[in-house]
Every structure is written in C-alpha cells, then in structure tokens.
Length: 473
Image 1 (cartoon, rainbow, N blue to C red):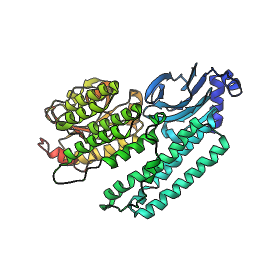
Image 2: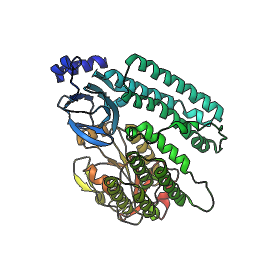
Image 3: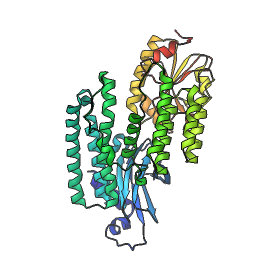
Image 4: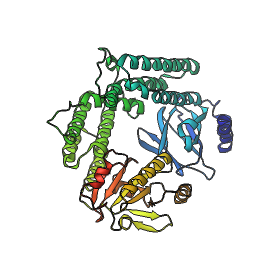
C-alpha cells in the first residue's frame, strides 16, 4: 500500500523525474539529485534537509502536503530530513532520486522510500526498527547476571549481522553507505554493553563482576572518523562510553551537586584526549555541555563548568550558543522573577505569563501535539498534585504553532483544573525559559519568583519542591 502510494506521488510531483531519473546516465561531473515526498498529518509546513545538524535547505510543503527539491549538486553521503520534532537519515549516492512517504502519527514505522537509491534506504530504516525492537526487549535483561545478559545481546547481534550481510549481498551497496549501515549494527551492540553495568546497578543495587574481555571491542573502534561526526548511533555510543570512563566513585567528600560537576568536567577532559577529530570532539563537547546545563547543573557551579568547556571547544558558534544557554539558566535561579513570555489562551486572547500566575503559586508543564502520551500522563499527574495542593495553579503550555489544531486536540480531552495556554512564540519562550527538552516543569511562587525552574512533575521529590519555602497548602 505504501509503495503504491509513493509511486502515485512520484507521478504527480514530477512525471519527467519518474520516467527518466532511474535509467538516466550522468557524466562524472554531474551530481544532480532529487528529494521529495508526502507527509500525512504534518506538524509543520516544511521539511529541513540537513547535514551534520546544519540546515542545507528548507523545503516547503504544498497544499497537498507534498514536497520536492531538485539539487543541482549533492555530494554523496548521509543526510537527515527533519519534520519537527522527528528526524531520520537518508543516504544519497551520486545522482540518487528519492521520494519518501511519512505519517507523523507513526513516523519511523511509516517511512517508505521509492526511486533511485530506495533499496539501501529502506534497508537502513528496517535495520533501525530492528534495533529498536531489540532494545525494547532488553529491559528485563538488565536485572540478569553478566553471562545471561551477554548471551542475550550476542544472540541479538548475530541476528542483526545476518540481516545486514544478507541485504549487503543482495543490494550490493557501495563502501560509502556501508560505513553507516555497519556502524548502525555495531554501535547499537556496543551501546548495549556500555549501559549494562550502570543500569544493572540502578535496578538491582548491585555491582557486577564483568568478564575480563567485556570491553575488548573498544580497542577496535576508530573514534576519529569524521564521516560519523553527526551520526546518532556513533554519538550515542560515545556518550555512554564517556559516562562510564568519567564516573567518579561516590564518597562522603562530594555531595550530588559537586559530583555531577566533577563527572561532567572529567567527560570534557577525556573527550579532549580521546577525540582528535575537531568535528567529532566539538560535537561531543557540545552534547556534554547541553546535558550538564539542562539536566545535571546547579547554578553555583555553572561558571566553573563553562570555563572548562570553553577551554576545550574550538567551535565558536556553539560556544556562543552554550554561553547564551548558560545566561538563560542563570536567569532562572531560585528567587529571580520568571522572565515574562507571551502566551495565548484557549479563546485566542494574547496574554503574558505574569497574568497566568495572577498571585498564585503556579506550576508550568509543557507538551506538543506529537507527544499525546506525555500530555495525558502529565495531566493525570497534575490533577493528583492539584488534589494534594488545592491552592496551586497548574498551567499546561502547548509549544506547537498551529492554534486551531491545539484547540481541536483539547476538545478530545477533559482536564479540569488545568489551565490550557499555547506559547505565542516558541523561539522566544524557549530562549527565556531554556526549553530544550519537553520534560521540564517550572514552579513559581505567588509573587512570580522562581521556586524551581529545573524540575519534573514525575520527579520522586517533586512534592517536596512544592512544600519547600512554600505558600501553598
């Protein structure tokens, strides 16, 4: 069904492209390529075409939700197409002509490619979903002893490698694509090894005695292949590796705040030593900085961390961005007034966040159309909190840009006692309130000052945050 639909789309978007591209011969200096498709239930009116997190082109949707782009010259390699909040990879060989069908309600599972270069890209999506299924099956295994766990992940790895080898022989792709296909196979397996000791300890309270050869694969990894600098399987693995290598043994000398600081600074040092490719190093340094400032940070230590980060990073654009985030985080310290941000009420009235607070202690949580499950769970949790703290004002802030769709969505849900608003300008509110991830909650006193700007409705200690220095009952 999907393939038939995409073929029809190809014909509708560009008949000459469909008839000529697959059989067309190109000279050695011609790097012309095409990319297009259709998005069902779009969340935005455009698709971003990117390379290593840099936007190369913004491709706008037509009225029928199709899009199409002809590139006069496109270098062979891995690219991403983004339709926020989702993204996926697409690989272009020389003169590939690709169309893709996407349904945002089931983004990854719905993706089907058609055209010149489709077989390898459909394989990559199948491989991605195979890894996702294997990872979902992994959770019960974290409680097991090392040998049982190793037997399980080795079996899954063999299955994935067989799938990879079978399609490699069948499709006969080139070395350029093989780098990414093999990396997706291998680094997913390596990641399952890196995370096991830590998650086992969290879940069982016990440390494991690992076999002497458990980490031998680390010796075979090229950490400085710049072609992998923006590739998620590789970067995810590196992140978990650094977490393990930088772990600081818990002791009575360091509290949790200082432990988080020391661990993050150790990550910076190890990354600087291990990674020689400036492209990869800067990407990882930026990831560490984002993680610390938005998750592990404590404002009194932020400058110490930023001083270390600035010493190692050579990416001036990212340094400026991290500095801005640092300033935003610093402005959100307890006792400071919450920066005013524009909001829209359910009846379309423009207000600011101060009006929503209106002299009551207030909790803000955030959601998007593409995270219905989070909205429902957060609303349920909010109502339980409201029951325990009846004088508390709870505000759900939608971060999408489509107001009509937001209102229609709310018509399907009855969430009493939760005030529904939408961000008037996502860029503005995300900068002022440092909203990089959706799972954030901000608690404000009745005077409009910040009680806690970096917490979560689902945090085990959230009710303690509400009670601390509180003016609610």
